[in-house]
Length: 165
Image (cartoon, rainbow, N blue to C red):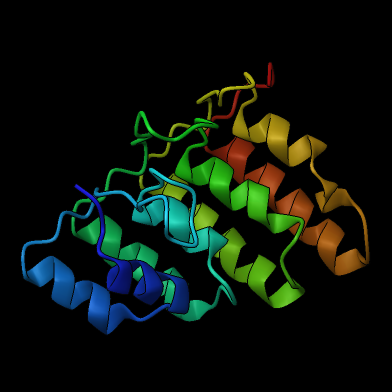
């Protein structure tokens, strides 16, 4: 099934009330975004969270709620063209986010890893999360950016990421 547009907008805005109401009314926490939403077609709500505008502490709490409600952190629907996992969505968004957003995305990354995310999942290009963390533009910029980039690598390694990324 496809997540209704108002719920996709709520995820983008970090609106927990709307998302929880949809779940309470029988919405499936592992449903996917449609191709007319602001997120790539087929992305799960966990994948959408780090791609949201203005990722904040509300998005961190929303990630926790979705996982508590049974969201599968390792689910990569067939429709997802790039085959990115939720963890890889976090890493993909780090380099283009503001420093405040990066801190929230990094916290979300830690939550996904603590929930048992597969750190060695390979996307369509054959790249793991660690490979993405090491290659992306996260290593450019000020000292704060470098700290966050290093922290993402440390989180992945502590979660068992293979060095053969």
